[in-house]
Length: 347
Image 1 (cartoon, rainbow, N blue to C red):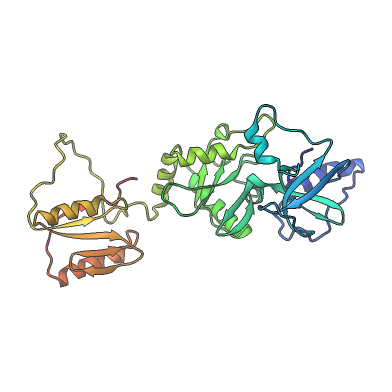
Image 2 (image 1 turned 90 degrees about the horizontal axis):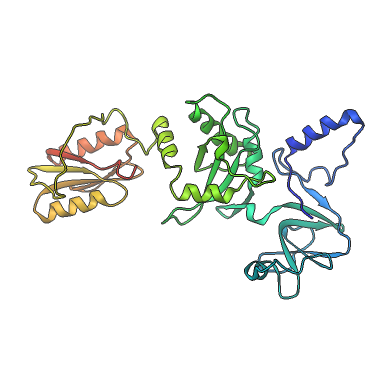
């Protein structure tokens, strides 16, 4: 048997379509069990000829009404996956209980399915259902229904996972940023979290199974491998956020230049280095100082800060920080001869 969560909007639409035929829905849970209008509704399953229990992640039984992992045992339960010992070891416990992969709870002798364990999202120690986030997003008219995917991603070096949401926009090409902003606001308002990535994609690029289930794991792997890097960069450029260089500071001008051996030139005077996040600027300043050249290293920070006469921090997105830097250099009587701009390295 299998149960899948359904959004309240979907069930309301189904009930409204069937009501002219005399169909009257019977609630499967008590009124008030869903505290949020966008929360996933639950489906009940009756059990015949099998034993059912709810356990926590450590395989310990939980109290009635507590959500946990659904495990079953009985004659109708499969004896194992064909020639797949790894899968059998993962789902079968030593005492014969089979882990269905579903989450649910027992109350008054009835089972209520709340979702799939693999579709649980944990952010800052709080559990969320992927369907809960996706249902909130698809309340927007600007988003195509049944093509929204929510998952977590974690890039190398990051201590925690971040929320990513893939959407298909109904707006004309060129208005993707408007959809991104509305999705961020909607998720923040309805679910109480802020997605780190909102990625508008084409409908045909959303992978689905033969029965229409979105394959979130594939989208997660593509994002972590850099497949959507160009989309993210373009959104950054349109938004003009902290990852882009403000127009009042820099204007791009391309000039043809022959490739030369990688070597630092002999620089005169003080060199101002606007450092990147990957250590290139720091390495350049170190080499210059070893050669006896004078340089000022400016690294990214939350706000302007003078660390020493030759080291500063500033927020690249704050124009006032550049003014403070200029005043600090003038106060120290530092006359900059050349600027090495490395802030955009890696973007």
